[in-house]
Length: 58
Image (tube, rainbow, N blue to C red):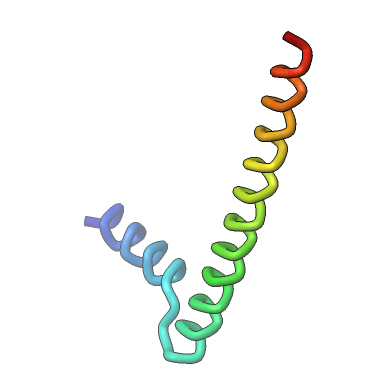
C-alpha cells in the first residue's frame, strides 16, 4: 500500500495540475515536435546526399 501511494505521488508530480501548467506543457511538446520534424528533414537530406555520393562512386 505504501509503495502504491509513492507511485501515485510520483505520477502526480509528473503531470500538470492546473491549466497554466497544461498550456506550458502543450507548448513544450509542440516545440519538441517541431524540432523532431526539422531533424527528420535534415536526416532525409543527409541520406539523399549519401545515396547520391554512393551512386556516383559505383
